Image 1 (cartoon, rainbow, N blue to C red):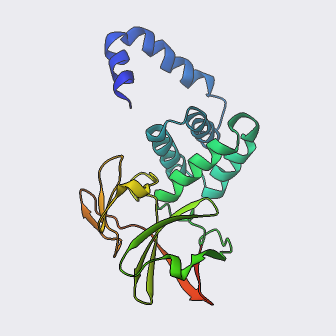
Image 2: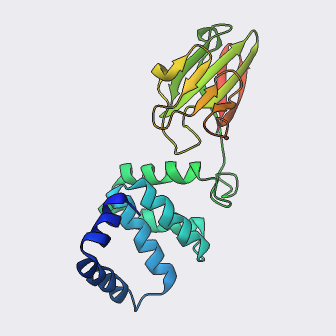
Amino acid sequence: MSDALNYLLKARPEAMGHYFAFLKDAGKHLDPKTRDLISVITKVHAQTERGFRQYAGRALREGCTPVEVLDALLMAFPALGLAKIIWAVDIMLTMDIPGFQPEALALPGQWHDVLASSAAKDGEVTRTECQGRGLFIYRDKKTFQVFDSRCPHQGTDIPELALKGSTLICPKHQWEFNAHSGDCIKKGNSPLKRVESKVVKGRLLAFW
């Protein structure tokens, strides 16, 4: 619950009580799963990340499947639009929800041509974009380590300016990562997501 909502509950308890009573009564003829999915959609429409995480988690705990959450978002496409749906899916991917990850959904991955291997300088960290996905690449002679640029905390995309030597600092909550290993070295406890990679005919390829 947000600080503003807590304030309103204390400042105007009677008025807010009527509001919550209205919400409860308005959904009394819906089954719990449907109510939960509608709540998820409203949080995506408002793009309130904290609320979305809360309601998506509750929907899944109370019996909704990851595929049902996806279907609810896609059915709401006329109201939400693609950008908000992608925003929501990006957040869900950072929540490490069992059954939601691409491998659990049996979604086929593929190799993507990222860049010429020579473009990544030995001993340095390079940030690049590939088909809308940010990547950090560390090269050690002929070995390449490729990491997703999204912070594992809340999915914030870490920009190139966040790189200080071999350290990446997420601008949102200052989680720090070793850009050579992907390990979280300060504030958090989750590493950057490693992306499978290989070099073929002078091109660095990544799989997702």
